[in-house]
Amino acid sequence: MSNMLMSALIHKKAISDDTIITASYRSKDLFGRSFIKTGEFKIKKIVGDTPPIFELGSIDVISEIIRTDAAAIKAIDGMDLIRYADIYDILPNGMSKKVGRKRGRKPKTQLTT
Picture (cartoon, rainbow, N blue to C red):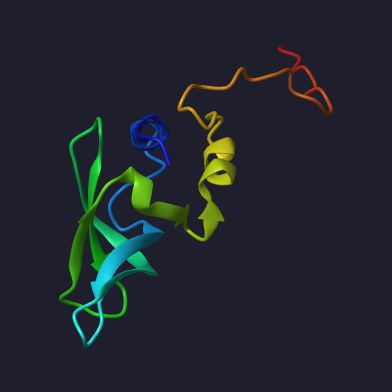
């Protein structure tokens, strides 16, 4: 995903240390051939702001630490990135949404005596 979206999510504190993400990474098989795998990781540290670099620790293997950028992240807390950003009123390009008029019942006015 874009670096601007990740920077906006970091700025709103939607992504911080110990957030669970799904990301793709390079791995090698027994014959030395490299291929791309997808796994769940916990963010150990966020380095930089634009573009952010993530240090990820594997949930399954304790000693495995991977450094990756925003393009490798597929989901945050099991949610698609665009849907997760929509919760925090952020567009997919990293800009803030215009918050519309609130709907529903109006609060009762308090009478002061």
